[in-house]
Amino acid sequence: MQKNIMSVGFILALSGCGFVDSYEEAVHDFEPLYCYQSLASVECFRQPNHPDKRRLVNYYGPHPSRYDAPEPAPIPELKAPPAVPFWVRDPEPVPESFVKMTGRSGVPAASMPILQSPNLPPPVSQDDKDEIKKSRITEPLPPKDSEAKGPDAKDAQDSKE
Image 1 (cartoon, rainbow, N blue to C red):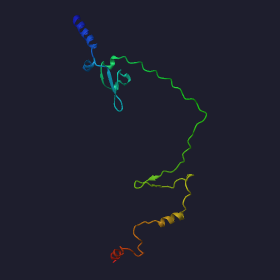
Image 2 (image 1 turned 180 degrees about the horizontal axis):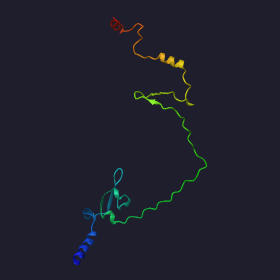
Image 3 (image 1 turned 30 degrees about the vertical axis):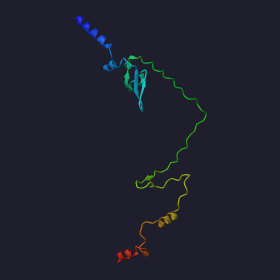
């Protein structure tokens, strides 16, 4: 019984010293080349790059685990920048009311009058607003009380009769 246990233990010890996988056994004697995936392409090196072991694409020669990993770089002690005797402060924003936008045009449709900002022109008087509304063309047709003139005049007169 002890002979069997000893022989199985000896076989396991020898198998632990073998190759990592069958691929390593096939490429072990090749010139070492270790290729890693980068953003745009694959980069190859003569020595394995241990921090990039998760990006390993392919290798020739001994498996990268056969090489000793270097000691990790010490983390530097963080230091605050020197204090300055001045600072720059952004001006406070000017509060303005919400401007409602319609989906049909790029012109905002204000539901409420916008607060007066120092950079805006003075507001338009009500009389001027009424004049602007009167001068607008609301329909493509001329008013009914005026006589139709032009090539469509006969059609308009025929439609009235």
